[in-house]
Length: 413
Image (cartoon, rainbow, N blue to C red; front, side, top):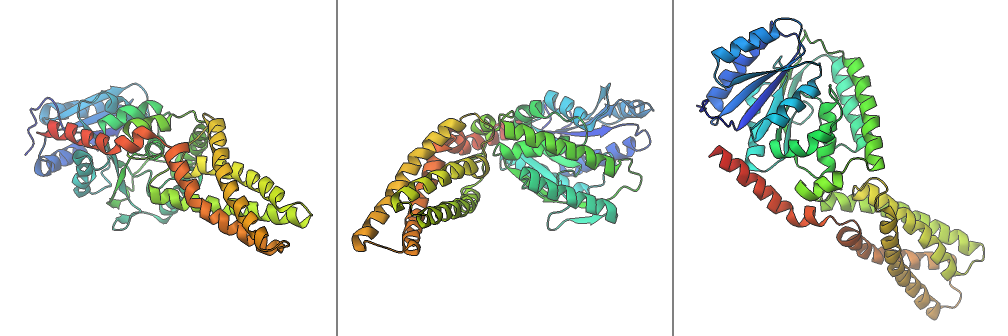
């Protein structure tokens, strides 16, 4: 059973409400009972009122007197994101969570949600209605809107989490302190914006399959919310592209790796970019040699064009570096790598011409292709360890995670 007299709770569960006088008491009682029975550490339940005009605050205040570990925060303006940001940034708990007042998500998923954060394994955790093992009961219209929205996030923002909008999430307080000041949305897009920032900062997002039952009395306008979310997607995409969001700096401080993702993910993207730039290189080389340009000259021009495009694509897509800051330096470093690659391909062509003085265009193209393939490993290593390296994130990632684990475990003890 939780020690509810502790002044420093381990977990603070926020319930944002607006005009919920008829549902807030049942929600808090049920959640409180569940935490008393299943959560072995001090906790707090914070009812965050979003400018209610009914008796929600009065009911919630009564719960504070009845139940230990319950608090009420009043906000003068509406907005779920505004409420979460206000409470999370001032909470003294190391683990912060929230859930919708209708409790559509089965509470048995709460402990699996927060446990990875308490152990230091993850930085954020989300309940997912689309993950394997989840069980969802809701109408076809909401199902289609939800799946379409998450597909849009994957295409437009490169999201790798499966469910952005399930009202069942948790975050470490130190991570919240870094990310929340950058989150602009104060309504429903708040969740998506927070998750996209976390992913771009190289943080670990844990997903928990949930049992979820649609609330038939929900007052959320799914279509209007989706349209607002699309506008948020456009805004965040623009901010990431312009470099206005300092994701690389945050990744260097608290991330678990480079912003572009794991080595395997980077290799996959690097390979895709390599295929595209090789097609450009070889196509331009073949076209120039067919028009009577010298093989060495054609190779130099074609490789230079392909290298500039390759550096730009790998910078933005493979290694997750956004905006124009450092772009000129990266292109200059790319030209150094270009020089190495050109020497390898030029050397291969030189050897070919020693063997035969008039090689066919197809044979020359094949030799250049083989030499380019041989230089691919050199190019990837140079990009990862030199051009697009984030030293603090790569070298200190495990130490940072260990420090976060030590902090939480000390609070638990």
